[in-house]
Length: 204
Image (tube, rainbow, N blue to C red):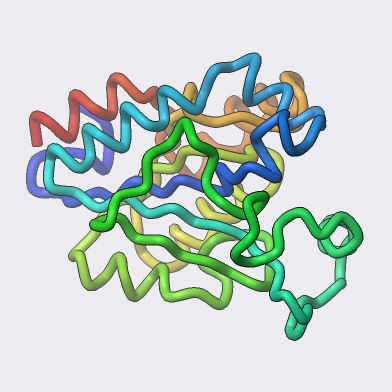
């Protein structure tokens, strides 16, 4: 049994930043997109999302998008400055869209943020999860460098349990990913895998 996914607990799948301009090598050739491809995480995320829907549990696609007029986009760190310079993730653009390997259904939650580096910042994600009576969030997507540790920390601060579906995630390098999932995440989350999570929510 996975802590946080016991019978009686309600979980939601949080898919972080699986957007063309971040994970799709056809749009961006980066260490992160290469890790996504090497680890083969996108098909696994899609299968895990299907398992959540089959169990009657929410799937949330958490996206980072830049406003077309850049209003409110605060360039207060190097990554924010890089995104502003590249302009690949402009709201409504193909680069900002979810990668084609991952289905987005009308019943899914789509949460866009226009500021910050993690999915709870200045979004309705917490309200959407509480509306669905969620106890635990399962994290998938990218990256284990920044957005996912931020999501886990914010989720714990908001009172949720956290599970990381490790084989459904990637970081900028294999080394930083391994460091995060062995040294950082175990302090704030249960580290598991997609198949085990799918079995747990099915049993619950």
